[in-house]
Length: 622
Image: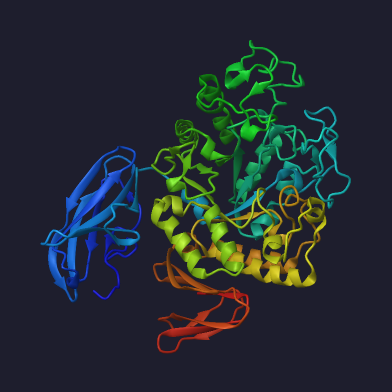
């Protein structure tokens, strides 16, 4: 045993199988302390967080291996899904003992345990994680005809020009209500399907499309109706049907934690002719909300009164959204959608998400359910409660914010090792199906544009300055180089590479709403768009990039190299994020390798291939 560790859960010599395990799986644990430490006994303690059960197993001593003592035990995983925390204890014949946890040996009784995710059997559709996702903010993607907001819910108004900076200033009442519209339409999205298909896109993820008073439509006014400015239900069905003909699917954004105050259900301003909860206690929707003092005081999302929270435990609400045969979840799946992304999933009760999963699978067994979670979803705590997203009854996958965070920190000058560590932690903690079904991305409607993040030297303090900030030529050149590297990582990493509309066109912008401009049709940055399209087509054509295993060859400083393997197919991603040229060498059993990005070929020598990368550049060897 030459490894310089006693126990490493990521090494198959110490723990088999790797990472999270299915209920009832036999798990082999091996520890190898130095013989000189004199340990004659070893035990493992496993604490099951959800069941509350704690179990201790004695390891068998197999005797010496070189300069180490080999201890081993095989333990069956729990029969029910759980989150297990474990550590080891060692002691000698003189009764001296100590514990071993993630930090090493310790004798103070304070334990930092390893994590073991035990998940239940469930079906996860493979199409999502293998394909390329494209996120669209519908009001800003494509308008075919002029829109008229007259007579619609909310005091909407149209911006004069498609390329205007989105309005961000408060209205005369001091409120930012997002009532400015650009006029994007579902028919506009349909008209661009061939363009998206050429980029390798296989899934469209649409931000909310239901009737709403605001351009972002996260304050739903009527779940049963497409917003008239976007089109009709027939337009939606046409979009889904046309997408299906191109082997593409559509995912909808489900905002079920809160509703708009100007909605059919709350009806604070009386726009709708029926009784809303804010108008009468006799309203059929009154019990949907948690009232402090009717009608003016109620629970709302983050205290924003235009977004009253709903009671997800209310039977009538659950029936309307989920369980009824014509529920919102079921209705729009039948209309052509292939899945849902759950907004603020950490604010939805586990039981509610379970019911949504059941309704989704009953309606379309091949539909996907993705949750918005910003952290490691396997250990997420919300409202002092550990969540159970990945135990087999809730989410198929989540938005992979940790991927975005780790990628941007690395490309902004961080150490590639931290990217490796962050991503291996996710791979270790998530069930394999959830890891391969993660929605990976560089930007969304909630984050600044990736070009601005990687290119701008600074972020102006004043919002007005941020609204009109444009990268200088030098900033743009730096941003372009780093965006291309970020895209290379995005499209070659396990999970669905998700592109926020316009990032592939080189759009700029700081935070919301500056990240929500109109798509620059006819003015795209073609260097970047061609790069994204090339990567998208590679992702669509190479199975090892869709579902291959991952192994890291190098993660040190500015250099990162990892490999995706499926059978005899290999794809090796090489990244040099530094300001100086560098060489990366990898084992190679064949005579030559081709960099799919540049077309350059490399000849193997002594079973290795060395690639010289210029500053801020990358390669994809196959």
